[in-house]
Image (cartoon, rainbow, N blue to C red):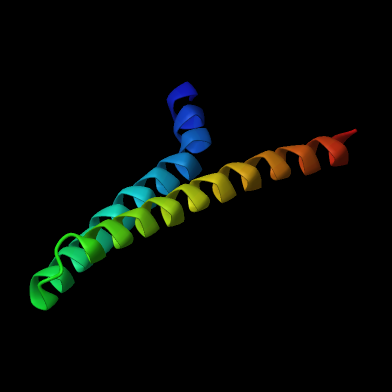
Length: 79
């Protein structure tokens, strides 16, 4: 089925985007609550937001690189 093939190709990237979203939301929330408790708003919020973005984009890059490497290895094996 064509739809299943599209979904199976998109699944790794969708998982990486989902983790990017969760890293940003969770780390931002932690930063916000720590800032509220320590009365340092917005310092920790911004630091943890940035860290969540870096972590999420790194995971997105790693998933994409893994997908490309796997395609290359399969191609080498078949040739």
